[in-house]
Length: 244
Length: 228
Ligand SMILES: Nc1ncnc2c1ncn2[C@@H]1O[C@H](COP(=O)(O)OP(=O)(O)OP(=O)(O)O)[C@@H](O)[C@H]1O
Ligand SMILES: [Mg+2]
Image (cartoon, rainbow over all chains, first blue to last red; front, side, top):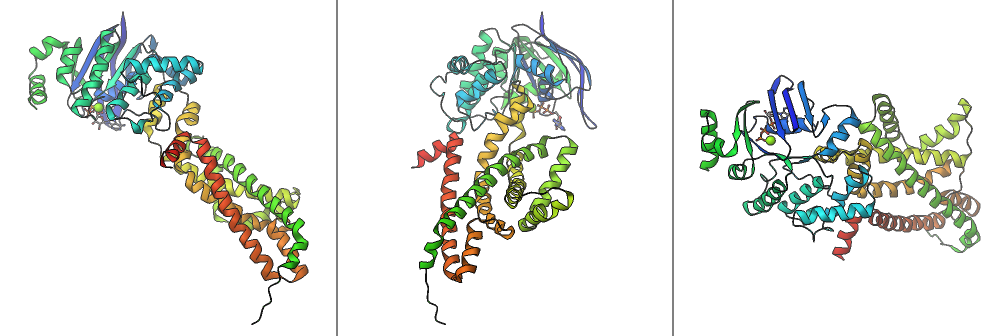
């Protein structure tokens, strides 16, 4: 059964059409990497999947919800769809633990003590069990990003979306964040990863989708897509990305 | 130019001065915290509210910030009765002070709210928080923390401005001083003492309000404790 079903969606910003008819489906437990040049619409696609952007045409079903822009229905959808951004977006006035506890307490109505246990469990998962009381500005970028991942996980989402979560990080810090994501993949989480880490995509993603100019230009099982790209555009994209 | 300072006569007015001081403190605190509540509410409406309430708030804020507080007091005390609303001098000045401070605080807090990056809101809404919860838990706390210093400055200015209430016969610190000086003619002595008291109040208010800020904002508190 597919957890994500996207049917021919289109998205315009004014006169600029950014998504020009994208269809895809993602099965439970599948890990999909989304690659493509800057401006090809990867972030926009991801943001459409949790309703941060409103689509102009097409249909989205995700984690058992039909995409709706009714506030309550959208909130219900978002409870089941975790998203992590490039910029972490931790709440600066809350400690790591409080960042994670906020949504379980306010949205899921967990008690403080239940939420605390859950937050601690999620911090342990990303290897930050001892940083519960640290404020974001006391953490490195990699640690902040792992807290952001833990914050999403605490809502026990059905799907996780990652948008270039390592591109603001140094190579060493990138590794620790990728390791946390790889652990999640190993546990069977359904995920879409927008990434510029081609080797990581190839290793972790079951399937890779190459986007170009707002459409899916080529896709396939990661191994064969990276080994034998079919289109010349993907070949030159991969050459440029891997050549660096 | 020989002036013989005589502070002795002031002793006779001690009870009145304490009464006046109490009134000044009461009006200041009511104005500061009443205005803070009103100002925060107005700030939220002016960034998030529907068009009509937003316009009403805008007009209110502009009026408060662009007219002298003395005129505001006069309008409420002398003007409203012609519309059939008759308030005691004390109630009039209380209303005027809260409304005036609310207007200033609304502008300060609005700037604080607008300084919060939209990505914070996206993060909160992506976690399933409602707009109200996002405002309450994600936007307001860091926004208020960021504008704590201007809020405190405005609060101290308001405390000083409460002296204007004496113009409609309310016997705050300044009001008592006016009475005492007209009865004793020791004008210089009286106002010097009053000035010193206002300076002391100024310091006390700053310390007190900073302490309140440190109690309310945990992160500021930890930073402060880290420094000392
Ligand atoms: N809110 C917006 N308003 C107007 N244009 C936008 C908006 N968001 C994105 N765009 C435009 O949409 C296009 C696709 O942007 P998007 O962020 O989806 O690309 P991307 O594939 O994620 O690129 P990158 O790899 O640089 O993150 C770009 O041309 C961008 O300028
Ligand atoms: Mg992007």
